[in-house]
Structure formats: structure tokens, C-alpha cells
Length: 303
Image (cartoon, helix red, strand yellow):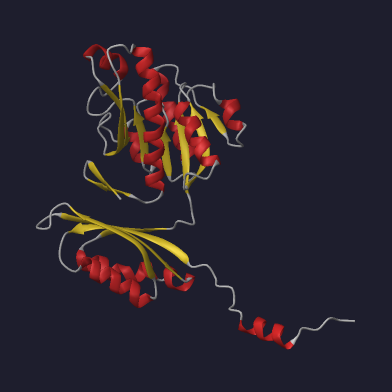
């Protein structure tokens, strides 16, 4: 005998709301010369399109003649968000904006380059496994073979591209470019102890983030902990920055420090510094992947 529902059960079922379809989210990052009406125009467009603003951050370098920066996150139906980029073009043209939309549902593909020291690599892989990074690590490449087993144990491809001497660097960079072409949205130098050429940076086609084991601009280049010890510093730090042709002078994303004393030798400084390096790099990578960093000349605005 087929069971039947009571009248009360039928009324409850008919009154229950249909399960709501999750809304699509997008992020808007924009910058332009500061002027009245920017936020109003953007908000009006989103409102008229049927999108709802979830979070909004803005900054002006100077209200009179400065540069305006905006990061907005909004939600709407698939139909709403898919048509917004075209409609936003008119607002962007009106204010002379540089702008882009980001999609939180599509994690950025990250390629990691590393040399012998693996503390930053291991930290990024740990955070990636725990879904603490809004990113998808797609590969690891190194000029040393040391980390193959550890990386492949995570189910990731490992590529050994040696650079035994300076004469091999052009061929190594050619192999790296071939490996990275179309596979990633961001390259992370997790203590990759090779200087990338200007040609490589122009051809790779995606941002490159480096961690430098110094509180830049102090002690740029090689051996910063030894030079810090010689100088008798009381603070050591690390700097995550975008890579440019000018060594260790790209736009800074994040920095942090540890307090030290005359009792710390170079080995102790290096161990303490490693803790700062991995946390600073992880923050920078996370913020970039969450579309929180806007570049402005040789500086950044981080929301």
C-alpha cells in the first residue's frame, strides 16, 4: 500500500520555499584619477543591474589631484554578473579607469620556483592542502632535484631545470618559459636563488612574486643575514614584492620583522628569518590571489 501525505504535510510542503540557487560573486578592482562621483556611478550601475555589494574598500592618494583605488565584491545571478563587464566599460571610460573583474570561484593557478631551502615551499604547500590559499598550485620547478620526492608526494608535478653555471641560464629560462606558458596565473619565487632576466619577465606574461630575506631596502642582494650581523641590527625582516628587472626593487606587497640581539650569530638570524619569510610570502600570495593588491608605479595598495 502506497503511503499518502496528510493535508497538513501537503500544506507544509507547498509553503516551503524552493532552495535558493547560490549567487555568483565577482570582484572589481579599479583605479583612476580621483574625482567626485566614482563610487556613486559604480554603485548605481551594480544596483541597476541587480547586483548586491558585499564589501567595498577605497583609497585616495590625495583628494585633489591624487589617484583613486577601489576594490568591490558583489553578488548576483549568473545572468547579472555575466553581462556586467560589457556594461561597466561605459563607466570606466567616463572616469578613465584601469579596471578588471576577478572571479572568486576560479582560483588562480600558481607555479612555485624553489632552490635548496624549502621552508617557504613547504609552508605554501601546507596552506594549499588546507585550502587556506585561494589558489591552485599547479607545479613546482627547481634548479636542484632535492625536493622531487616531497613535491610528488603531494600529487604535484616536479620539474628539475638545472643551472650549473651562468652560461646555462638562458637555456634554463627557455625551458621555464615553455613549462609555464599557459599553465599559471602567478609565479612564486619561494627562495628561488636565481636572478630572472628582463627577457624572462617580459615573456612569462604573469606577475612574479619574490620573497627576499631582508627588510628591503636594507641589505638587498645576496647574503643579507651575514651583512645584518656585521651591521649589528636589532631587527631582521623579510619582504615580499613583485619582481621587476631592478633587483629587489619591485613594488612591495608585505613586510614583517623579528627582534634580535648581539647574541644571535648568522645561523640564528637565518633560522629566525625563515619564520618571517614564510609568513610574509604566504600573506602576499594570499592577498594577490584574493585580488587585494593594486599596483601603482613602484608601490602597491593592499586592501
